View 1 (tube, rainbow, N blue to C red):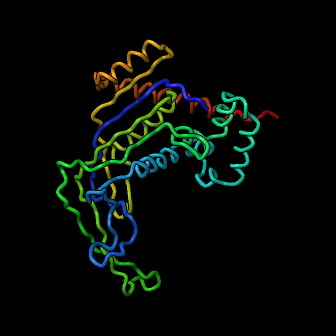
View 2: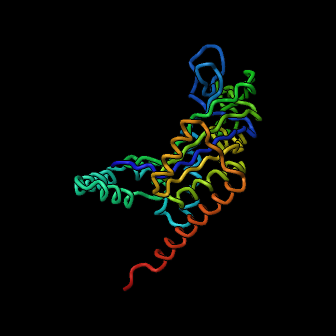
View 3: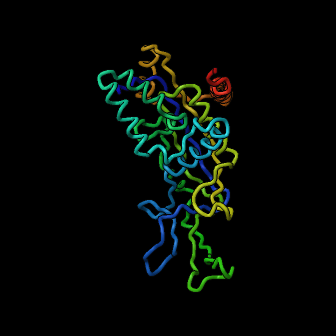
Length: 283
């Protein structure tokens, strides 16, 4: 499948922990240190994998779409089933020599969320980079929390099950950077809802969420948007801006208007899909 560059959305900002955060790497085998350490970069500083944030956002949006129509966000287990792979392989064989038709058929066989975030047979359009901690705000201040496993039968502490959990403290800022390319308006609307959920502290991350850990808040600092609108001259001008480093972010008013347009496009598509579902086949 041959890509043609159409548009690009780039978002930068800061993701700040509202409560302590634990994105772990499993139980440590070191004789000294925390039993359950957090993920760190090569310099020993905390790191949030972009895949963790992307997965949490995807899960949140899946729950919304399933409330409207379960077919819009399929069970992730179905995406890797042998039956699904047989369907995809059949499509690839049937349209082997027709790239445009193959692409269209693969999209038709893919649920809405997977069209945006990706599936085993279709690349996602959203890229969220790993989030490093803001160096100027980090002084190695990890916290340790004691824990104990509970015996379900006696409802008391189990023998020999004490452990300590390492967490990144609240108010720790991480750098956020996301890129979306060649997205339809309704897909950008879906992303806009996901970003709003992060901005309003609705998507927790990591372990211990039922105990209050992992609440984060996104603050967007800049939004860059380009749409070629099929005009080669616009694309050439954009490339010149990239090379010259003269790109300008959208104003807050422009960004708000675009986000509203994208969400309205999503609502319109959802409304049409719901109407088709309610009509159903005639007898």
